[in-house]
Image (cartoon, rainbow, N blue to C red; front, top):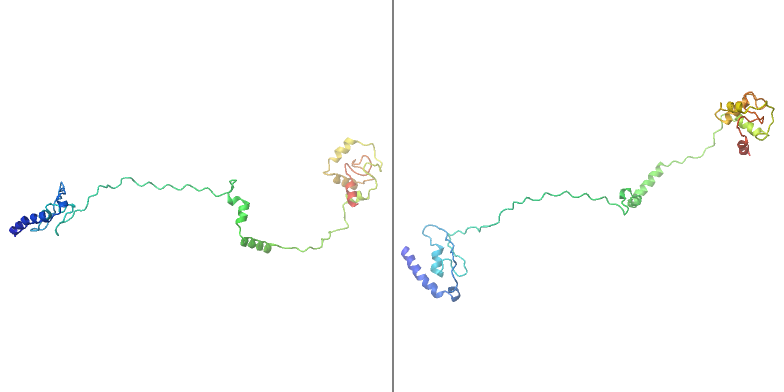
Length: 231
């Protein structure tokens, strides 16, 4: 078997040289031929086969190697290394400012914006709710006074007086302004002083010394507003 292979290897270079094109004969062989992979025992290596057929251990000038069925091609090596840079942590999104108008007023606080955003259905529902809560009260007659015959003594006297304020009608002893001023301080109002004056015998008598000028009006009581109101 090996003798036949030796004869074949001796004849093949001659055939390869005769049939090889000129452009292939001029191509320089590669500097470092790739090592042939080891196959099964007794198999012809790719280097021997390429040398016998093409005159070069790597085959044609194209540089492509033709192997046998028992040759194995190693996986191409890669020079890339895994990146050691850690991925950047995600940054939190910046808070978005609340939408507002040109004056910086929030839409939720802007009356015009809130009014414009309300729909017709919302307004209609609000109107119906207001109608349901609306109550109309029918007018009734005014209630009668418990005792219409009773009126204020002060008012009755002011309306019945015929003299003007300060006009003397009744005799009084010599007036004492200081005594009158002190006595008037005992009452919370001019009407209260006039009522006490009438109950004590006025206007004809003045035991409390409240009417020093004798016009029938105690302290600073003035009947004019009552008279004008009565017409």
